[in-house]
Image (tube, rainbow, N blue to C red; front, side):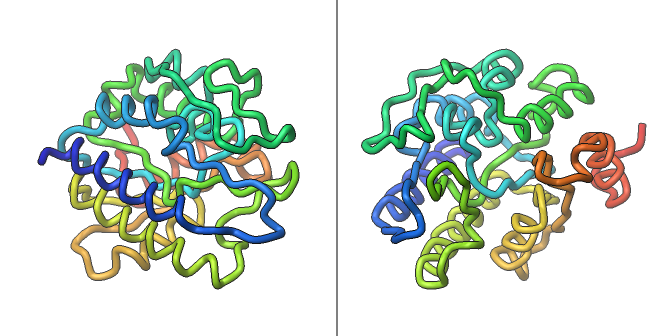
Length: 241
């Protein structure tokens, strides 16, 4: 089985495990884009996930206007369609909150984190193919958790739900690392870096960390990509050229 099929098979196993889980209040809505947005997710892996990757960037979980809409990690609609060149059918989830509609590639909202991340990579590498020659981007957790109109990040779940979820996500991360063989796994934000260190402990690879591009971070609002580039160069992941 090649690296692409390994990743798709691992994603199916993750989807099956997390979709069997239940998340009680205060969670009001759970979306799994590996289910209803499988077509664009699979297109992303098939187009860009093949072969060995020197650097694997690891996000936390979907944003409401990013991967939740497009199935692609940090998947701001415009960047996925226009830079990654991916657009595919997104089905309607079984239960949709009117506070968090899923419009797929017709979504009128822009995910700031995704526009910053993919826009930064576009500014440095030009064509998407240049970036993906030895980089890839995945999310640690595939689920979006809502409390009304507010996000609940995975680390804020009750321990009884967090334990099984993290176990499934750790297993998936290990499978993606096995498929892509990176030298570096770079957590986009502290949470992702921490989960990578725990899930991949003892492996012969290095864990890095960069600032999360969320607009909730004051530091990210002062030139996120310039700051992320400095971090990547400082850790020896990228060159300063």
